[in-house]
Length: 424
Image (cartoon, rainbow, N blue to C red; front, top):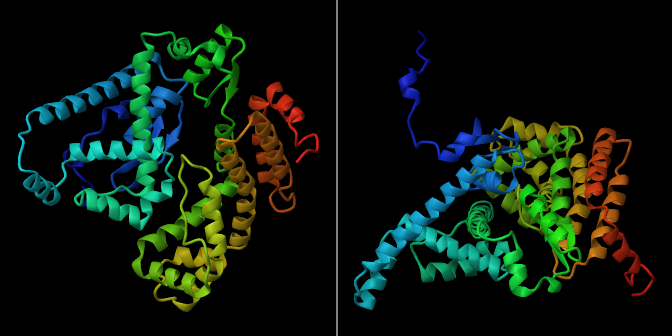
């Protein structure tokens, strides 16, 4: 037997899998301790598979999962939440009043427990969501200093953790509470009955199968309430579909090789920061994108396009420092890489602008049709000579999504909008 073969009994170990993995297939490891997860019901893939995101998918998004599985996951999350609340209440009741100064010193110098950190994390994400705070505030030095003064032993989460993990977990908790409440009521009629159905003009939700069914039931019961899908969600889905094409996937793959290297290598990162200062380039360094926020795709592509000169000079001036041959090859010898990045960024820009405008509290139904038309026009302008296959894929993707949102209400509001009639 070869020395490289690991005995079967030694392969097990480490932390056990979370119960949610029973409904997902574990794929390759994408990061230390994190694996690709594929839903056994609908084959949707998550890179990496995180517990809260997978639970949210089963409860809210998966249209093919068995009802008993969805109920089991909801029950599992509910029991976990109740257990956490019970432990917190029990500890709170057993506390003894102590001198305030001694207590403050104790908390400042003692290690923050996992349960207490979880309570602060929940309070933090609630503050960001309910107060409308911008996500980038979490990285602001003054905000970081404020929280350090309030709780020195609290490790503030980074922006990615705040959005991908804490926000998803809070949505999951709220979803379970809503399901629990709705089990005793007729969908959203508990709210409609309290406020009055006549005060509702429309219901807007994302494309989840459960909320889609709820919208249909409400529209049948109250015909005057418009049944409307979230247009910003649709544009995010268009972006997601565009990123599945081989052209876009290749650009993103090469980009991630570069950004991962420069973010994880101390000296190359330092050289890039110095070069940015030397060239006086605004906008910061290399960006990454978030799966839950597809407007960041344009920010990511735009960042490497801005830094093309910096990256080429660093590689050529410091061949011994830049140890990655893959990075050197992509930056210097991959034919048309930066041109393709620029083309893809130009395609993503109108999508980003449309999403941001439609997420504004000033957006109207007329804007929905306007930005759909604007996006369709932008996709139609993709050069046929350079990216024929990608252009055809983009047009097909847009047409399929457009059918879901081609409502007479959108078109009517567009026609009666003052700007359509030449005013202002």
